[in-house]
Length: 431
Image 1 (cartoon, rainbow, N blue to C red):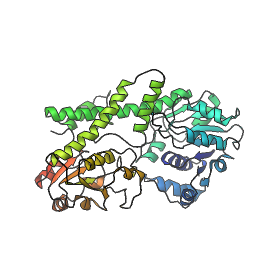
Image 2 (cartoon, one colour):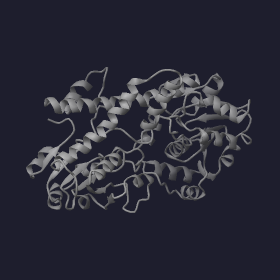
Image 3 (spheres, rainbow, N blue to C red):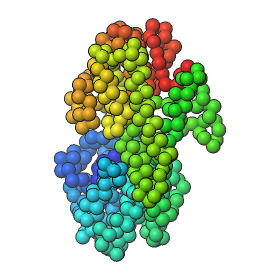
Image 4 (cartoon, one colour):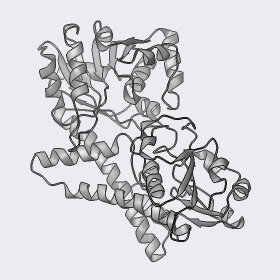
């Protein structure tokens, strides 16, 4: 087993550290936030991620997982240093590498000889070279090992990956990194750093493209009277296509897809290629936000001025509390701009939440349960696919609403059950 330092305790860093400890490695996770380090050292996990709190508790109990303030304290005795820090987007679409560079600069003086620094954060092509230049340690190798973790299933994805990608020009370093995953059964791709970095961007861009495509097909289905559910069923049985990510909804978002798609567009443009296809994927996604907002307005008779709208779901997807680039937040902001009074409930968003994403939607009222969101509402919009909403008592919803109208942007609810109770219902791509 190896000694691993993980710099950064966000979604990627904390999941990486906890899972490596679960695999038997000795892991020290570092963060600049002393209060956060103190909470994690007590087993208090702020991130909503299934099983993550269990693995942190397991690692702390076994002594294989520790938390410290500052990267230098984690890296001084490590064999591997994983960089899992944010790479926010600059206004022009380029990824901001300042956090990566700062982390590399901090650990450079204390890294043991022959240590390996691993880029786990999603970084633009060429970032391995950037880290090498910052480190100025010819005895230290830098390897790319991109993450493919989905929020809401990150622990499962780490321990049961579709593939492991390692980018290194040093064969021995690549072998050493691959040895960390010996207990995981998955294909391992060893390539050069630039290719490894490109694989991550290409994967996310392609998945975003599939979602934009099926949302466009949903619009076609509505126009011709077809049912997108059966269209997806018929397409998905084609082994060349598959069913994954062919689920119409309010659009794609989150901390990865928007940033990575724009970063790939920027990377292509900076090398002289106009990635027109991806620019269209982004445009279709923006169009989808507007389509859902128009559906809500249409359900209310065409105008939302003074209309109370109940909203179920604010997170960008179920099983996470992440509001970053959430389609739900974008749609709510458009409803408010049309004059609606919006009251929303999300199981992962407390009524007193200070999440910065909520600052974008002044006037939004966050309430404590699904029925409170329906109270006096003339339209209910379902924007996040929480199972809690699937099994809610529809009779109580009917009693709470002023007018029984539902716009289901996730095609989550039982249409027949709603019709029986006198609701009008509109989904996405449903005839």
